[in-house]
Structure formats: structure tokens, C-alpha cells
Image (cartoon, rainbow, N blue to C red):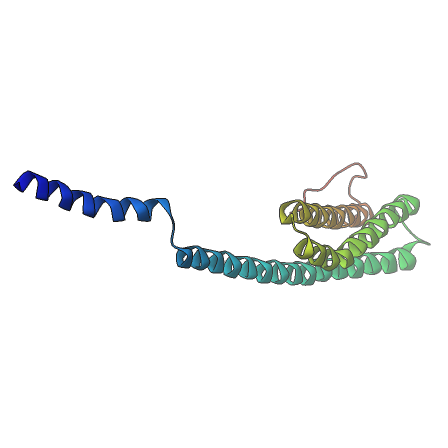
Length: 168
């Protein structure tokens, strides 16, 4: 008789536990969904903040590069009559730098729009890859502009014309 009572007691305890394991509580599913929604809202906020910060930084870099190009052009205009350097080579370097700076400025202007599109898109990984590609393109354009400007400065200072300076 003791074995029968023990068996029934064990059966009574195991059935509710196995029932809980098979059918999840709807309240816990709602809590998980709320957590997912909260995380997605946080990620959207972070992406927007990242876009604003990157736009501010890249705009500042492009502005500084354009100012440097203007200063070098002023030096070329002042010294072109009695220049000891190849003025046409310097002007071609500066023209390339200007083009790269304009291309970078256009990329920076498009970044915020791309981030808004990425947030509206259901597949955010593909959209964010496009934003990253645009950011990398803007950074590489700024680097090209800066490198050509530095090469023009080296030519003006009397350095070798074929040198490619290392810039950070």
C-alpha cells in the first residue's frame, strides 16, 4: 500500500512539472517580446547617435581639408611667378584633392538619409552594410584629398616630386 501511495504521489508531482515544460506561460512570452522591443528601440537610438557623430566628425575633417587646399592654392597664387617648383604638377595635385573633397562632402551629406532608410528597412543588416560602405568611401575620399594636398605641399617646399608621404 505504501508503494502505491508513493507512486501516486510521485505521479502527481511529475505531471504538473512536465506540463509546464511543454506549454510555456504566455506571460513569459510577452516579457521576452517586450525585452526584444526595448532592445530594438535602444539599437535604433544608438544608430541615430552614431550617424550624427560620424556626420559631425566627417564634416569637420572635410572642412579642414578644404581649408588646407585653399591655403595651398593661395601660396601657389602668390609664388607662381617666381616658383622653383612645377606649378602645373602642384595644380593637378590640388585639383585631384578638390575633387576628392567634394566627393567626400557629397557622401557625408547622404549618410543621415541612408541611416534613416536603414532604420525603416526590415532587414537592418543589409541596410547598415550600405551605411558602413558609404562611411568607408567618405573616409577614403578624405584620405585621398589629404594625401594629394600633402604631396602638393612637399613639391612646393622643394621635396621630391615622386614621394608619397605616409599620413595617418
